[in-house]
Amino acid sequence: MSDSAVDELRVLELFSGIGGMHRACELVESVECGTKLNVVAAVDINTSANAIYRHNHPDTTHWQRDIKGLTAKDIKKIRPDILLMSPPCQPHTRQGKRRDIQDPRSDGLKHLLQLIPEVPSLKYVLLENVQGFESSESRDLVLATLSGEGFYWKEFLINPNQLNIPNSRLRYYLVARKGCVSWGSDPHLPTEQDCVLNVQSDNETSDSKVNKNLTELESNMTVCESNVTIDECNVKNNSAGNATNKECNVTSQDGNVIINEHNVARLHTDFSSLKISVEKLGLNQASGSLDSFLQDEDVNEYLLDDKILPKYGKVLDIVDRSSHRTCCFTKAYGHYFEGTGSVLQQGGDRSAAYAQAESVADSPEEVSRILSELKLRFFTPTEISQLMGFPKTFSFPDETTRKQKYKTLGNSLNVHVVAILLHFLIYC
Image 1 (cartoon, rainbow, N blue to C red):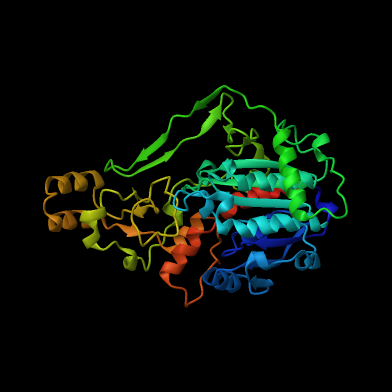
Image 2: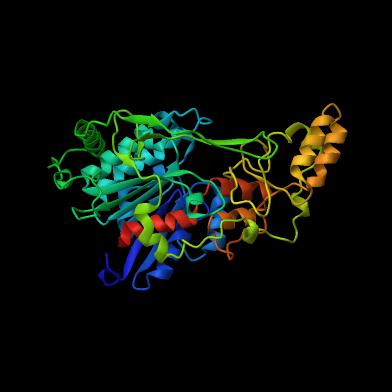
């Protein structure tokens, strides 16, 4: 789409959280002066997240309600061109028991998919979720619905650290554009024949239409290549040799991630096809180190309690100012210590401290004294928000507790990655 093609695109932001996708719209709009991305409505049910959203976007229409309560009439009334959404991730995680489409938390997405065929104004869709969504029935249902409505799509499994941003947040993204138009030379997009809409009878329900689309999509899938290998796990250890961060992908020989056995479309696993958008947004110049993201004032309250060091010292993922990575910050950060995000070392020699602590492991008091010299602290909510691409103007209402800040950030997304994908979706 050229800059002159449209003056305004109307955006509906669902499962809106603290407004990460709204921020992505603002970032895209800042480099594409001919187009306004107008977030005409945002919807979420979480009280804490909604308070933060409204604090930062007081002029945006915001509905605190269950997505399942939306009607086609509600959506048609605001005439959205773009649908942005980040549905609940728990149905696709180990902690959520991976119940997928059977999880009640998937009901909002299923309800929304029934409404999409009744919203003729919709031209673009962007969806974000956790790794694992790419092999889910929920993903199948999304593609079935979009296929039946004439959308082209691309899928990504990408990480902000691939942009030299020092934070890991591997996520699945789907971008979809309506209409039988060229979208590069990607052979894995639907063909022109795929875009031909099925003739629907007047009395066909949305449910039956979605089910029919899913059946047809699965039956028309190309057979997957058999030359599949397992990538070597990327294992990162801290200097204590304890905490690890493993990422393993199932790939074909050309390096593309394969989905599951019955869905053979391939995921883009890097930013190579997004290069134009990365450069347009100026996101190809990240420093790579943590130093520029860190606060130097008012951080003493974030120091780890010395009492927890003997018990949890070995499972902490420790980084320092010069580090070029942090682990993904989850909603449990600051409350649990293993696998919820990195902590920052502000002093001492880590290797020497851990070696000395190991020699006195039978004395928790001594271990605590030795490891306390490292001055370990949690990252502040402000530091985490900036690692996730939120601007320095982003803030929290005064009444927001630290736990609420960490939890809502852990449920949010990387603004820069979404902005790149949104720019690609509309302009490339």
